Length: 111
Image (cartoon, rainbow, N blue to C red; front, side):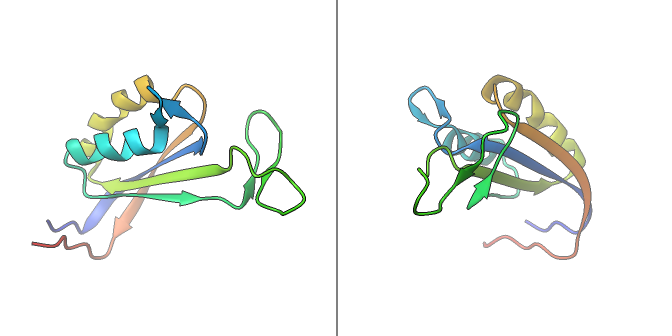
């Protein structure tokens, strides 16, 4: 697959303890993105952060490292990202979803 030029970046912020039917939510999102044929998805674990609850979650030794922030990032064409958004309405009950325009310089999938 080759993707160059204008695209959309979909970033989904959730907690690492968020579940979907007893499985990690991030896993379900990545699995559905793969099923939808999106170009790729990556999950990044945050070391520290806070969200709507205003409670700081951290990996520091003296603090409990629970519900750390995760960011799932997916980049693809505008049409494909927008077609995927309704699935997030079903999956993400608490979190933040951001869609922003990006320019892809080069992406070539493996054969």
